[in-house]
Amino acid sequence: MCDVHVGEALDLLSAMDWVHLLQLGTVDFEMDAKRVVDSINSCHSDDTEYGNIISNCKALFSQFYENSRVEFVWRQANEADHSLAKAALSLTSSQILVNIPNCIEHILFNEMQ
Amino acid sequence: MEHIVATPLYPSVHEDRLIWKKENNGEYSVRSAYRLCMNELLDTSHFKVEGAWDLIWKLKVPPRAKNLLWRICRNCFPTRKRLRDKGVNCTTVCALYNMEEEDSVHMLFNCVGIRNIWSMWSAFTSIIHILDGDHDSKDIVFKILQVLPHEDASLFGCVIWSIWKQRKNKIWKEVTDAQGFVFDRAKTLLADWKAARYVHENSVSREQPVCNVKWIKPRAGRFKCNIDAAFSETTNLVGIGMCMR
Image 1: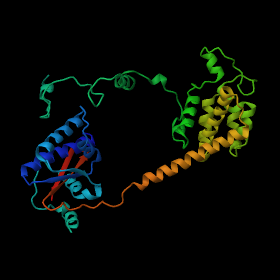
Image 2: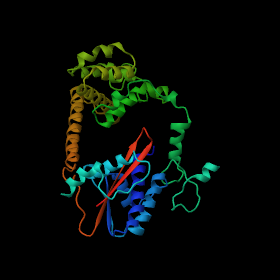
Image 3: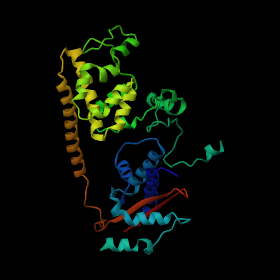
Image 4: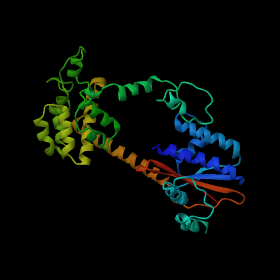
């Protein structure tokens, strides 16, 4: 079991790894882990495991996301992903869902109104 | 050896170098090495003193009063008797009344003038049996903190501080504080501190945002990727979710 901030940082790292392959253009990232967002936006670096993940994120970010931002949102505004992450715990491998899965359908519907 | 070679590395790691794990920047420091020794390598249990220390640290009083109570209970409080024990060449009589030997029980509780100060307090009747029954300042402090309700316990800490202040004024400034003034100073200290905290706490809570808790659509021409991680202790797994809109 890893620390919460390490897990959240790995989350951002894999998101950045994946999203630039989709070649969608400008993408902004939002997450509710304040510590990770602050680390990404600061120039301070450290040599811990967490610090290494963050510097990897920064490297990807400067390479592929020139006009993008990483921003903090309150947990209440990040509900869809919270549910997705919980659902992901019970999956054996990673999945890309094109259609909206049941577990977040109602949340997305409310948010997109 | 196999395990070392098998360690997965991030692409950003190019060369080997020494890293001191106890500091975030990887550089050795005496500070972190000291902490390592004290917390993990050495047995420090013989330094520990039994007692309900939480009673002191949870008091709602200024830090200086807490610190003073802690020093009294750890017996590292510079009464004349204690100074003499440590080899300081000074007299051991009470600094205020020049009568009895100045140990911490005498200085804080038993000295005639000090007793007068305590007797001004409405809670005095509920602690007098403790003052008369014990001869160790640590026991007295812990017993009093245990029996008094929160408000009174806070004032107790402040009175102790004010008594100590009275003695310092006497020795260093040659000023004698009146007994009533000593008690009032304790009350003022507590009231001022509480008032300052009240303002501070209110200003902090005002910063808590109430709005902006709803997801907002990205501007035209941009995408938004929301991400979050979930942790399960039972399965030792981390689940990650991303949502592109």
